[in-house]
Amino acid sequence: MLIFFLINSDHRISFRKTFLAMGTVTAYGLVYIIMVFLIGEEAGGWRDHYEVSTVTDYVPIPVAFLVLLLLAFGLATALRVIHNAIHKKNKAGLEEYYRTTDAFSYPDIESAIRVLADFSRPLDKGGELTLPRRAMTILEKKYKSGLSMEEMCNIYLREYYSETT
Picture (cartoon, rainbow, N blue to C red):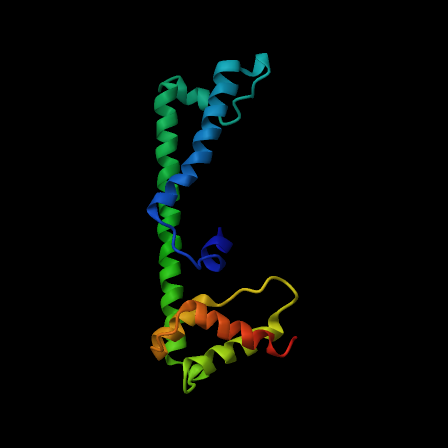
């Protein structure tokens, strides 16, 4: 969870994607109901290790299943809200850094992108090359050059590979 919140927060999670979390919960819940209540442990099904049968003595299985789905959806929604809040804070901090730092006080955006590529090159450990599109988008806002993302990526790649080829 901490990795999800603190490290992997470079994108926003839409409300629609919250429903994806429900797919696995629903599938597992249906399999659990079939294996525990329809087949039963005696006939080769699963043991009721969640002790759901104690709840279903008072509440019908479909109602208990619906309550668990609602709880899972609530948890998924809460995690999405926390993740998006951290993402928004990190993004704002990064934008502020690129906008105000002297590290990117160059006469034009091309020079700034070249410095970014020169900075990244020594960090390459032979893995896959990742283009810093977010940083270039922020630099574009700062310099207002009118360059497209494709043009900025081409500048970055030419500089990145200029001393290694």
